[in-house]
Image (cartoon, rainbow, N blue to C red; front, side, top):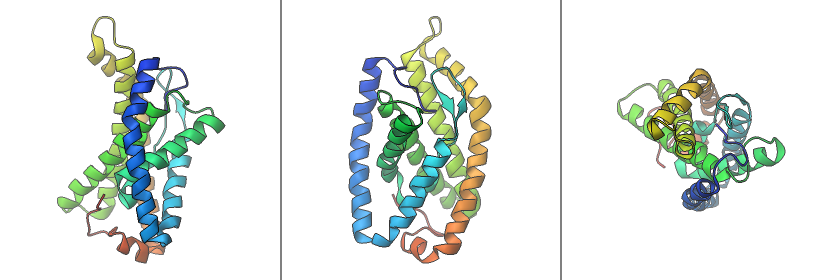
Length: 225
């Protein structure tokens, strides 16, 4: 769902950058506070960042000017809260733009907003809702990661529809077209990402049980952002 370099109109690129900037700033403060209070969480933060980088780099062609791929943000959002993923996702997207020609600098703000802001907030909202309904931990993680991916792709579709409204049907018709094309590849990817996130989370619970208990990440507790 990375929108390619130069694809958005200048006004849209600037607007999305301005919208994303406060979340990145708040996320940096959140991360610094967490690490200052709990230095032992650096390793888990690195795992979350690496997970996001690797999964979001696995792209395949989709809508013209964009691509389909997993996001990997659900895991970090569950571990550290949604705000922490804004700067993490920003760094991931910046490196991918510079090193992999995946996304772009002018579209960095738009890509941060969809993948590193909307996706993580959706993940935490779904996870909290699922645990409040007393769903088992595994399905809760699966739903959070999968729906975070889906919300990211819907946001990207909306961004493209705003930039390129349909001449006849306007924004809604364009949104339906972009979302429909994305869905062919993105929904299967979201399901796969959900399963993979559960596997990784179970591994973390097995090998980092103490740290996760201190972070309130246990099968019977709701994550606090």
